[in-house]
Image (tube, rainbow, N blue to C red):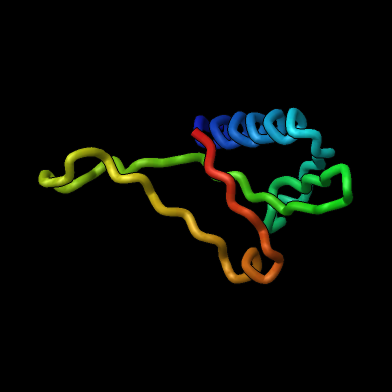
Length: 90
């Protein structure tokens, strides 16, 4: 298993714990091509589709940048149509 995939798995589990602590029921997607990682269902039946992204920083930055720049993550068209929420985790 690569360091990148381990980082992603750990990040997903951090968010699962946070959601469980907030009272959500959480299910994990099994399809590797699914546009979301998690489904969180609240006590009143409200449903959140969540894609968990690990915070990443650019390795090569310009000399005049004060610190490493965080890589911006955005939802793809399918995620926008499905109202998938991106949650960033470090």
